[in-house]
Image (tube, rainbow, N blue to C red; front, side, top):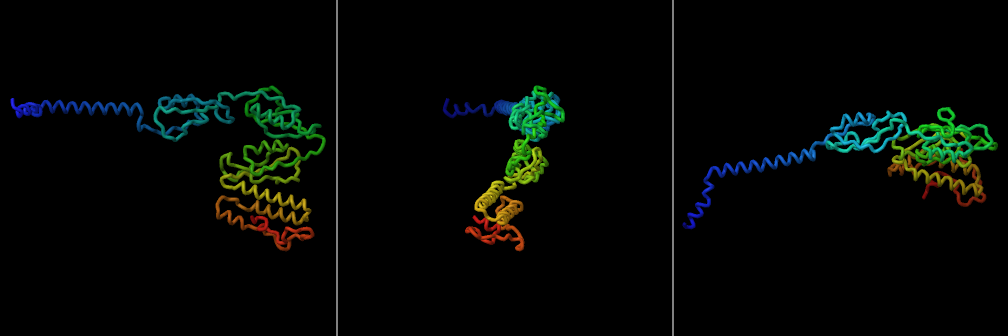
Length: 351
């Protein structure tokens, strides 16, 4: 058989229709197998099946698990007591409501206790106010307010109350309860110094006021922001080294957000005011001159915006104390070598 005949015989199957039928069947089987495999893989990985997480905050935890058991896997992280929140309810969830996730995703839950956590009231009697506040904190309790009464030992705790009811040591109370401390006035002066609260974060304010034997009064929020960003801008009575107030009196505070107000700059100007005043008092400058300095700085501290915006900062720096010429103090210049007669805010704020 010659070479040409051999080649012809070898490719004879190409003229057989069953070859093409078999080839088509093989292709269909392979394509079908791939499609089936990828469908199974998609189903296994839930590819493309994302949907928003529902808001479960406030729902009973057991009910939430029952309703969404086919959609998510629930993992309980913690149980806490939250006053005025439904017992056994979802308090926090992660991922948050609205986030798109795949079916079967883990949902991490913090729920409220079915019953509040109970602690024992520590024995605070005859402790100092400072010691009593520390003991309350260690027990998971906090100060509500201070009540001062006639008693020979100043700032000594006489008894503790919750909602006007006396609580004895070792009595069981709900963790996180606010406790009123009844404290002695003492036999000497019944006045105390104010704490300087300017630039103090909101989370520390009440503790500092109570530590000074005072109560917090009105709280005014000038910005709507998170607690960690809110700091005291103003207090009433206004702080000074000389100011004394009665024990147990109230202090009102105003809060600004550190995002909108440059507290570092504000405190720097306060420091400059106090430093200049202190130096001039030591040098025995006239009371009118020192008052003029204080009034000038206080006007600036009250009226500047202390903004981060460069244009507004430039406007702030141009602000001067608008005191009428007729009210300028009479300054005696003997022994005054470093002060110009024309006292104004530009003099004090030149760098």
